Image (cartoon, rainbow, N blue to C red; front, side, top):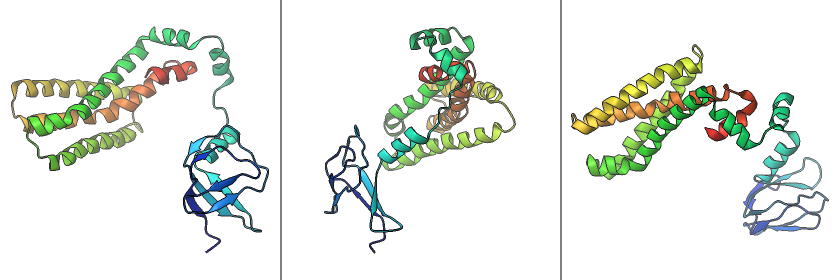
Length: 239
């Protein structure tokens, strides 16, 4: 049906729109631009393209993946910063903002809590094949299931955290989850060093510890951003 949109890719490099330009698609079609629409500075290799027929007439409209979103954001997305934040940002350099934030004890606490808990997650991701397959003899075919189970724990804790925030503040959830995280970490160290229970103690404790990421990750960021809302951008970079 000629009225159905066409989804394909432009062959080669896309360098923007311009009157008279031709665009070769990977389905063998060649389209020529007849209007005066222009877009300079855009460069994408083999971008996705969608051609949609007009409601009236025989014209077709072309949208390039990423370019359409970028144009919409440029022309339609409104500035969300307040005038106070904009004025304050003009009075200091990024380095001055970072130095001022590092003198905030609360921010340092949030950053350390988030960083240490995050380090636990990424250490597990990097070392899990050796731990599960080589140390505990888990079959490679079963490795993915155990790895996925820990992912379920992280995703599930994020959902529980969302429900808890309906009743408590991020700081209240963070205070309790931090204590739980430290307590589980201590038990995990003891189990790993002494070998008590081996995989049957280490792996459940590891699941519990990784699941605390769902409570600490978002709440440390939320708490940090509230320390100094005028420097929210710099805080995001530090965190």
